[in-house]
Image (cartoon, rainbow, N blue to C red; front, side, top):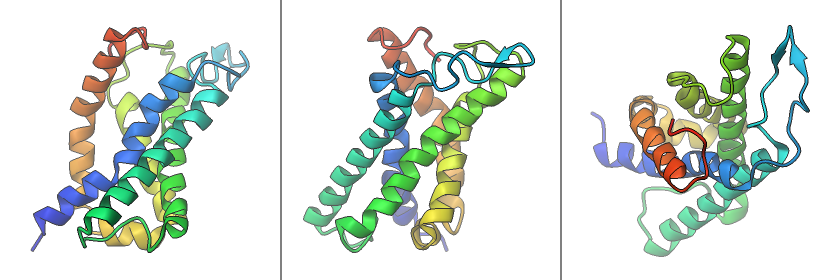
Length: 184
């Protein structure tokens, strides 16, 4: 039987991956990753993907994870954490955050290959690649954590279901705060 508390807790533990993306919006804009280069006349990634956003957003995700780690540690929830101590938690947090933004970049790469311009509505291409790549990075670099919290795949499915409305809401907020050009 599925423990719904653990599933919800697993979603909570995924916050660094969710936070890395808006972190990239906040820190981005410097050192465009593809430097304007194209493949078959189409930009590789576009101006929306920068080194400052990738690194800055990832580090904001890691920082968010450190905060979550200490909230769990101090509250003594007892359902598990990213690691036994903050040092052992860092590989999980780095995998989750850098995986998230690698997935975001992958989604942009696919959108450019499909001829979609920067800011074009890509539906699930804007939403699922960052989640899936984050899970892949966690699986590769922190398999013990992945198996403990996402091994039954129910939390993964719920995260995939929750991501589109959550992503949309955050993007609308970013648009209203004039941090994004489009609300999607």
